[in-house]
Length: 129
Image (cartoon, rainbow, N blue to C red; front, side, top):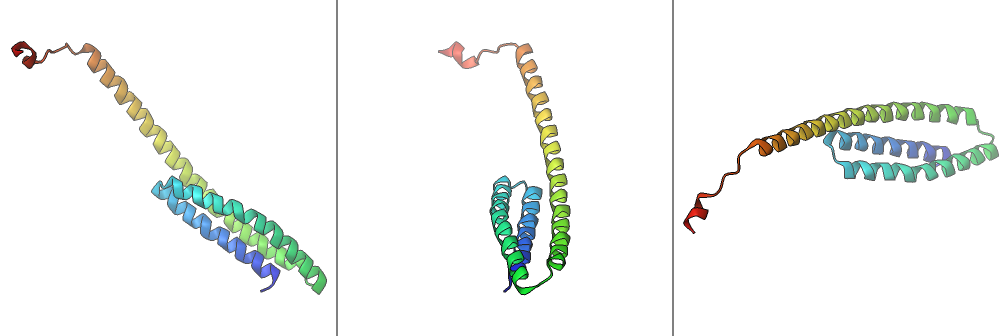
């Protein structure tokens, strides 16, 4: 397989991880989100190396880098769209979590108020001992 095919395969692998990450975000599986992000971080070095190898290979063979670059740009553009969608879902999840936290804080304050106004009731059992 040529270096530019390897490069495109790595971008496809990035797409797979991004799709998995999106599913994990929707499910609220934050450990899996973290794993997906780590996997994509590792792909960055491979992309850099494969890009350099592809350029060198094409320069030796007299190939046209502009054609490969156009394919890469289309793939990257598509990946940016997917990452943006994941970011929107993540922002929605965060907003929902903040709303839930706010509601829990409000409930906690109400419970404290109820406890502070409630009379102290002694147990009936203590009078028999």
